[in-house]
Amino acid sequence: MDPIAEFNMVGLSYDGQIDVLKDVNLVIRNGDFRFLTGPSGAGKTSLLKMIYLAHKPTSGSLSLFGQNVANMPRSDQPAIRRRIGVVFQEFRLLDHLTAFENVALPMRVAGVNQLDYRQDVTELLTWVGLGRKMDALPATLSGGEKQRVALARALVSKPDLILADEPTGNVDPIMGERIMRLLVELNRLGTAVIVATHDLALVRRMKKNILRLKDGTLTLHGPLKDAAPAGPGTSAASTPYTEASATGDRLDEAEPEAARRSS
Ligand SMILES: Nc1ncnc2c1ncn2[C@@H]1O[C@H](COP(=O)(O)OP(=O)(O)OP(=O)(O)O)[C@@H](O)[C@H]1O
Figure 1 (cartoon, rainbow, N blue to C red):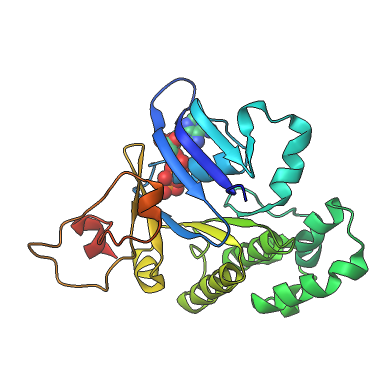
Figure 2 (figure 1 turned 90 degrees about the vertical axis):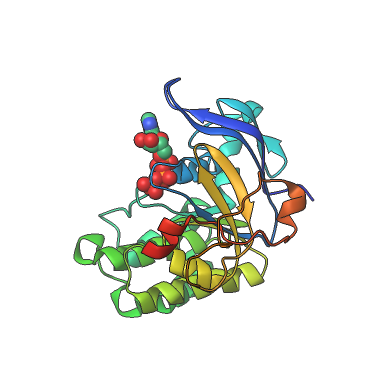
């Protein structure tokens, strides 16, 4: 089966300026769960957006579900996007639609009959703790509540891949844990998940492999160890991303000590 996403020596620069991404190699397959970490401005959102067809590579090649994006007709893009659920800060809810209608929108756009999605939408909103706010308009929801509606909207069409950019950024720790458990459960059922986050405590708890972006370069790391006092022998180890390293070789700490201490 074709990988969901395959980056081959991908570079990205905006307006021909600085290279945000350099020679990125990455394969995402069904059932993968990856955290995406790195300093602010490292290019995490840019990388996720490339997978959602918002930016094309400046160099190298990117294939989604076996199709090279360089020669993908525009008319094929909606079908690709439907297979990907996104939770991005800037993909806001539509203000004139209720929480229920926002979550239902991808199904409506895909031409699904309301009778076939009503229950799923209701269950999802209940699961994210918004069972009583289904008729609320976004303007009356808190930031965290909006984020949870966006999460439900990303999940409703049962995508092959979920891209989540700081999905726990605006919610309290209990809801954050709950959102992560939902993503893990979906992943257990086969959905691939990529979560961009600065929350190293979360990354450490979840014990999943980590993609780290720094200076435009992507490296793969094994799960973070439980917090331990910093000292000699705990320095960061990293390796350029390769398929071999993606099979689970443990690469130890992914974050520099400063980042670890601040988590
Ligand atoms: N549309 C754009 N046009 C020009 N430059 C952009 C654009 N989008 C992002 N950039 C720049 O690309 C770099 C990477 O941005 P990006 O948002 O991908 O980083 P990030 O790792 O997600 O950061 P953060 O952790 O702060 O969210 C930044 O220097 C940013 O200013």
